[in-house]
Image (tube, rainbow, N blue to C red):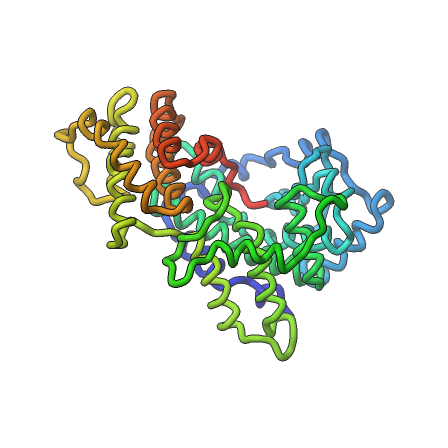
Length: 399
């Protein structure tokens, strides 16, 4: 089976569409000009800040790597590195000078079983195989010219779907569902000892508990990383179990269409949309977004053209008016916060806070008074201030 056959179709379709976006093209053109001037010095930095693993030093790790390379039909010189860190992490960099560089944290190499490590390794290779680095999401989202909110949401949705494809590549390399699930459990919990016994069914129950009967997408109960570039770990495990039950992994498995429908149903939980819905909850959320945007934008140094542009991306062109009374709108803010808190789920409250962060970041750095407003709204909704910080400062490159 070819590696491309494993790729999640939504990832591929969204990637192709995003590569046609002007903002993406502009950033890629700028990066190509930088690359034409010479290497970025990535290999030098890796050699000076981490340890390159040779076949003599790490024969067992290279055995796992060789199996992944063969399964995914990769044809590129590979260098593996390890760096000191108590956090479980791994990352694959965009190739430079014809080499692919993959780095692992020391704690991950020491705490994961061979099959768990092979899943992580195959996942990182998957980002290269599927050319996910062709969309430099970090440069686009955190660069000087921020994308409009709708494009930003598309980028985050694509990034999560790209993780599904990379997970499938890792699972295809490991060929063991339990090891794949336990690897994601370790990554999610940080646990490796005997104090907690991993149970696959119990882990997956977390996803079932998020889903409400007849609920709209996004009405679950996820954690603070729900709006990150990565899907929530139990959800990833459930998507992978569907993958192992499909005909991609066994002859009598479910069809590719059935697999994609099942995965899309799971992924839709992470794509709440209230900007167009007509429910009472959605209307309350829009009212809070409108008021919160005006108050945030007015908090310091007046409302800028960039903030108005972001505001009108959420609503309609010309929706913002200088006649809007920011002080009076701010007086209405507590009532609008309370209405959302009484009727919306935690997920929906977090979505509003995240979108308000997008408004605050329109000019680049979030100013102190703008952050104060964001924190006040988050406090009123019962959303952690840590979520505000993570949204503003979050890393968005694929790993």
